[in-house]
Length: 310
Image (cartoon, rainbow, N blue to C red):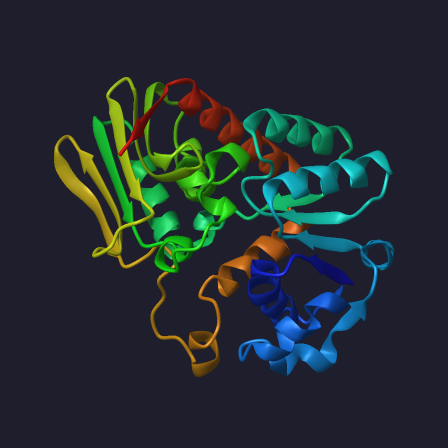
């Protein structure tokens, strides 16, 4: 049985994905009203196993989806590992509220031979597979990669304070949203000469960043703005010997076409979350290496970070 801890994406993202896969699902009773009140979830209410206490849910489930704040996630996983509980763990990114803690957690999970997956979902998107194929084909040439991601995050749109804006606790444009792009970059090269400029309204509110790096004749530039008022775009351009060989332009990276009525009423990331869930049956070593490489690249970016208040 799968247990979900977290009132948010754990419920409106992972829960429908689990039911689509025919899994038995449980969560906490305190989330029941939230589930009943959401049109995209209330039809699932009668099939859910509810537990009053978190400890009882953990004892009765062999797989746990943890979708809470990064600091809570670190404490939870540390507790699971130290208690020698063997559970399949599905974690959100970033996996902790600092890269030092993320490194500690990754090492801890690998040492315990834990089955775990982190929700880096870009690699399950159709465009990602196309991009990797073309990048590898052109890898012997001089390459220039440009990524531009602009959107208006929900906490900026609603003008509500959120940890997702705070880089000091695992949020912010780079750590929270940019982790997807760092994971993409880590999948294609070992980069050098990294630069990171972070743009903040205040010490606890980082809304954008610009990053760049290179490896011999390969270069990349990334621009991300999580508080774009007028533009919503996810763009990737790859130039080989100054010729455009890959050009992607979407309203957002998860944009999908030809959706059924059911799919259009649900979070558009559900189809990709199903692939994250089923990947637990694959060899762990590739995922261990991916998470370590992504975490290392993130740390190298932050070592070069310049903070601009604007």
